Image (cartoon, rainbow, N blue to C red; front, side, top):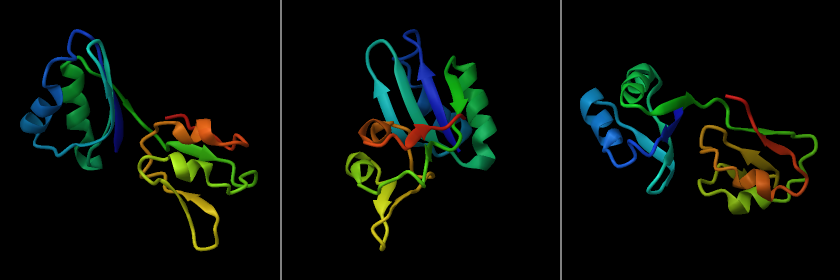
Length: 129
């Protein structure tokens, strides 16, 4: 399960993810992170069966946590398979198939939105969680 975690300036310098891993025993994959001195936004992936314990722990620490749904929606009928999304995707969620059509692996998507900006025919959009 992918979770979007937002850290406020008051807690950004605390080792919250490290504490979460130690205290819950759950392995956490960091898929995308933007952190500076005043705020942070991190997308993590946790096992579905342990998601509740991680969410509860992070919220107790003051982290704003949102479960992410299916990441990117694609209008397959309007897609021209140009590959603009393939070239900008940092995790290879967009890729060419054997027939040269572009396919999206939604489970790999980290919702960086680079593909949405790059798409020349606007067939990609962020799905609602």
